[in-house]
Image 1 (cartoon, rainbow, N blue to C red):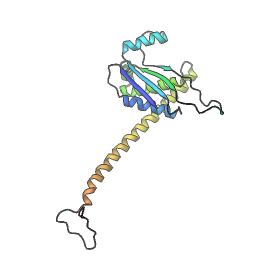
Image 2: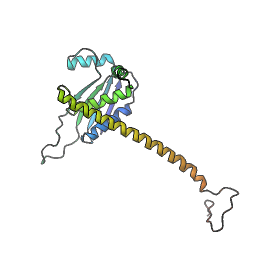
Image 3: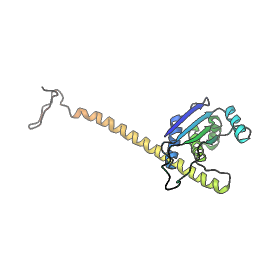
Image 4: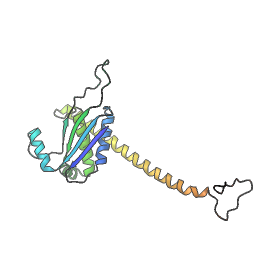
Amino acid sequence: MSIEVSNESGIDVSEEELVSVARFVIRKMDVHPAAELSMVLLDTPAMADLHMRWMDLPGPTDVMSFPMDELEPGGRPDSPEPGPSMLGDIVLCPEFAATQAADAGHTLGQELALLTVHGVLHLLGYDHAEPDEEKEMFALQRELLEEWVAEQVEAYHQDRQNDKDRRLLDKSRYFDRPHPGDHPHPGDEVNFGDES
């Protein structure tokens, strides 16, 4: 899966986190593993221009999605295996998202993760123009975001445990080596290194 991020916003964000959440959603939604996605982060004036040109709406917005290929789930049983496709572009505006994050009481990173999930779902054909569509899309968005956060927390704890294990194993190497002045017990096999 190829996910490219181009940050033209002038705001430092975790591109690794954006790729992680996008990759997670794509995987959970059973999109072809070789699918490609482009993410662009813009400043407020550039996003306002894009918003006006494509949506005919004034001012900036938080996220816009531009699908590239038509995705057909399933398809005919006798058709060849579908190949990789370009999902499209997700355009985020971190400056606009920062205001939303402050209003919602969470971090910019959390807001951008939410908007990334939202953007990928739009690329996959989900919409929220009608009340039923909105209910479905936002429930799925919340579920995916919660699952991704749980996976991140689990990975963090696993990394911490691996570090503890590594430090413990590093320390335990000293217990296996005879120290000068140690006297072996009768019957112990003693190896003092390379005795050729």
